[in-house]
Length: 222
Image 1 (spheres, rainbow, N blue to C red):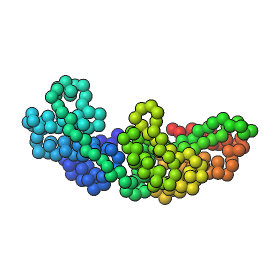
Image 2: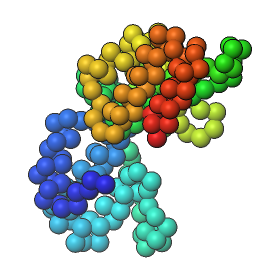
Image 3: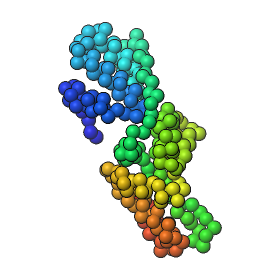
Image 4: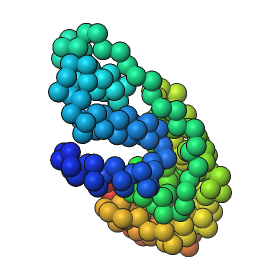
């Protein structure tokens, strides 16, 4: 886990960074509240009861809100209004690469089929977010020119999903070849890409090809 807890480093490095390169998802609202709290601390407001309550009120609207202990300790706290994040335009292609490095999923699965081998591989590229970020996932559909948005029937999440082989081969793979993923998901993508090429070349119609895809699947779906 990467963590910064030094107030001076947060003030001098973290906040200037995210002010220059703003978040696009609803996490921007959390960041703006966080920035307000840091400003109060830098002004020593937390040393007074009134100032401490101001920070607690911000905390109540931040992420998951107040813990049970904090709620009991500050029973008169009142949530501040969360900032409205309306402009969720994807800034550039490298943003998608970074977003995918954190939130994306490259999946290989098998389903029963009427083919001689009785099994067919399926590729899926997906990104899951809280349903409040539906707009950004819908914008991915437009930006990439493929895929769809699907809201889950249970829970508060939704998915950008691309499973059409032609879109994967002609749009998704070329996109990430040009705008590479950083981190362990790069290996997932490379294995996933190999499976796509095998399916494209009809190798999955042979037992040998199917076995190779099955082997790659275990590495991709880690």
